[in-house]
Amino acid sequence: MTALNTAPPVSDLRRGPAILIFNTNAGGSTRCTPDLLVTALQGIGFQPVYRATTGEEELERALADAQGTVFVAGGDGTVRAVALHLAGRDGVTLGVIPMGTANNVARTLGVQGEPLDVIALYAQATEQPFDLGRVEGPWGEDVFLEACGCGAFADVMAEYDPEGGKSPLRAVQALTTALTTFDPPPAAVTLDSEVLPETAFALLEVMNTKATGPRLRLATNADPGDGQLDVVRIDAAGREGLLAYLAALARDDFEALSSVESTRAARVEIPYTGQAFHVDAEVREPMQGVTGRVLIEAWPAALRVLVPVPAQAAGADA
Image (cartoon, rainbow, N blue to C red):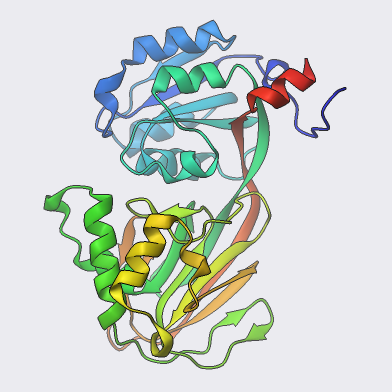
């Protein structure tokens, strides 16, 4: 019996050259070389051309006329940089080869493992839509792959010491500590057309992927292909103790906590009173004395991405 699948198999998509973008500064870049990745991609039917990019200008030139599949070997920062160039373009698909520390985008897509093992998985894969988030704030316009938000996590990121290195454990400790002490002003947030009661949110995260930052899985049920965003929030008045948040993150059921609310929405409006925001791993510093609003909207199917087909599904299609 043929499995029902609306996305074309990757074997139907291997036409024309592919591009490999490789970040030599990624956390796992020493695990593989561009030559080995190129050879592995050729082995499953792609015709990749390696583009060495050391800065934004080189990346822009490498992707200016991209068609077919663009494979990104690197972490979330590299994936974000490439995705922003490809967003909204027809005729191009993004394939992620995770080689970073957190790999939030890859993990949300179910793409995990050593680089050559990941490429082998792409021998049986489908194209699927991947949403992005659009942001308008007092600082300007932004686009995110993972999340945008304010509250304890944004403040932690603003204070996070980059010299300490990327540490999921250190980030979890910093976040959970901040959740128990953060003292935010009340705000009336709007989800689609519903205005929520004015609330002081200790955490307010608009998620597109399941995790953000150093692998903080705040939205375990997020689906970046559903045309909506997951709005995860904690009322400061009802927040729980440090151990409760630590345990929930360790169990991977953060949203199951009684103090955590999660709602899906395509449009989110947050009053701006000068608080810090983060857009993926970038911080938008507080703008003292500035008021207004931050508008966050889903950008449905802004990208096309490759997703490996599970072994049993691939067998059913055979």
